[in-house]
Length: 483
Image (cartoon, rainbow, N blue to C red; front, side):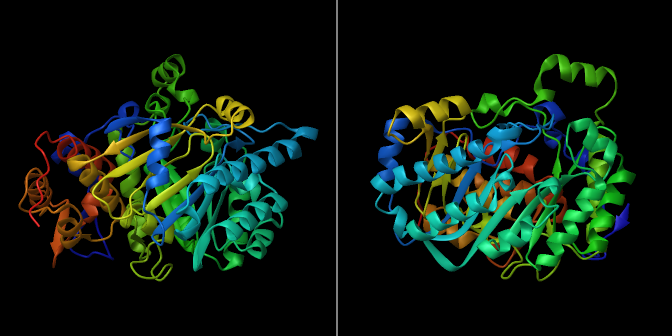
């Protein structure tokens, strides 16, 4: 137990916190928490695209995402949409193919959706998979395309995602020259035995080399670290975090191992560790840490982050003061989560949403099977949508609240009065939900807003799932506007 130097009145004890909140104890294989809602009326692809066309997104802020489903290796825990890139002479052809496919998908939307070129793109993120497998000429083609056909703001945040093995030469210098001004790198662990066991192909030396190159760009970037993996202990996680903080990494993102099957939700692929016989063998041999040990690792990470003055914004994304302006939150997170702006998403398995301050939300889901996506793009001239979800009433409110909570920025009561006509502290079911969270010390009230406490941040995904999505989003009574 240790008092925070950043929040001096708060004590860290996540084991005790879990004991106090048994409703939030979610085991590893049930930990399929996803801030995107998995409820709402399902929409067929045709109806979804009609709603896309008729959306009033012109002149409104939006986030643009391109998904590159290619990896040079497959991590055993990864349940995102991806496939191995071939080695040898076919590599360039495959990179050309996926650059063409993503630009072609974008063009199909631009041809039919008149508001798209008029939306204010404040952030662009190219991820995967491993987006930085694309060479400079591929990235240049994609950036040229979006600059020509979309309305990027002058200060648009352009983020590139990659792994340490992609940032060993002059890749970052080339990316900065192209205009990328923010980076994301998946390190996961500085313990070589951990990365070897999970199937990653970089070691700690490569990770540190890449971090120094990222620091040399003088651009903001985040380093992803996971906890709850085999071979990790609270001591090794603390050591990793201390190394990153001493180096001055601007943003450190910490993630708990999820070993539930996202493929069943239609938003990912089955991971190696999702396969029952593999998972059962690892459990028998004692490789997975317990839930309590997992949260001891998170507590160890928090101690170091607080010691070095980092602050979470959004939840799980710990940044040095002054890394970003206005709330110290990346623009991508401000668009997607804090404000819940429209997210335009291209590529296999990509999902987004149409919002723009409306009372209803339309979630968009692309074809997630990579081969089926490619076949569709080759044999049809239609957009590769799979299905959508229409969220109205309490489902729409809960969806917005979940993202707002995730952002770790003020949940402004006025916003929900104006947008949905409700008072979060007086109307059912929100009054009971937030009163309980306030009483349990998981959120606090400041002026006309609510915000997670440090304890609430530690359990943010569980709170979003149990309190916001399940209790508020599934409330059976109709939503009644009072304002």
